[in-house]
Length: 495
Image (cartoon, rainbow, N blue to C red; front, side, top):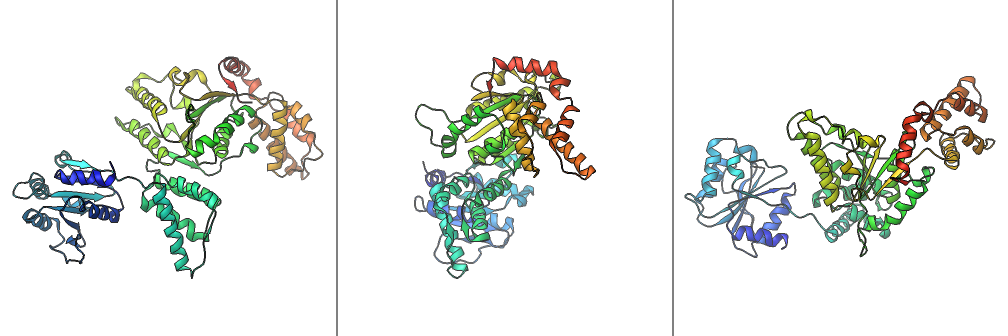
């Protein structure tokens, strides 16, 4: 059934109390005007500033009552024809027992006709006595046709207000903008669209990062997600050829949302590996490869000492991520949030969090691609590693010689070092056993030394820094080799 049919059915069945949580009051009023074409009732709107007005007639009637809620409820109870009463932001005025009692009598039809009371507000928390009588109705979010019409309206508004100046619209990007506005109410989508149009009189590729940021700020009500503004390109990541190919094969299916017959939509990957070898950078590059926003979930912020709050925080965070679709959800160091050795003294919170997270992974329908990274695989719950939880488990190993040469090139370019006289192969050979992070720090240390000596950095200085460093593969050789041995037959090499 459509939204209009559902609401008409509620009115036709004489539902006493309907609760609609939305900031879009105008849409609610318009929707109920359409309801009157299916079932006749008198339609009234109340607010503390205007009082009670009838709004279903062509004329603008004056307020029927003083604005206070007591006088309004008395008038509703005394009306001699059935009506629909839209009460805007009424919850703060229900604090008195006499007000609740009077409203209960209207809802129970004691001395009044079978009216339908509709409470409208951004967030509505009712007393238990009223909650039992309420039916909560969720407005449908606008579809792509509705969002496209709204965008065209904003373009026309800009042109009218700027002397007919035309808006430059990239039609190839317009569909992407519309898809990225999904999950927002029409009011929220219009606010973002107006910002994008009016800031430069154009809609194009350059608007996509700004759109993603604004949408995140609107929807991250939980506060447990972090928007990553700088996503990497795959060209910024050395090696990882197999992971890059895997992402490229799935890009069109994930971004379009159209899954060919016989295929499952891409869900996510787990990146295991040695510390400092680029797992976090790879997670950022996945978002860049898909061309979608990247949001990070920090499990540590979810835990709360009060019963049930941790699970609620996780539900809210995942719900916010789903509203941002399509996006990549990055969970760094997953073992710290979902440890297999969680202490039972936490009252079972860790197990409940794991259970909900596993259920969400299996049942979600939204285009949220999960990228989780982990260093200590032995600390992960076995339920999380079984086949099917993630599409694939990749192992990010210490970079090989070719990858190390590429890492040197990337970091030297990043720091604007003239390296034409350097031998990248020599540097790569000198850094055997080094991770990408350790190579970067050797370059940084060499640059500091050169700056202190007031000379340009050279290849010899970098090699000296490498020789003076003991990499993690040496300091913790047993643990690193143990991890590599475990991964060799259980995971897919990322490179």
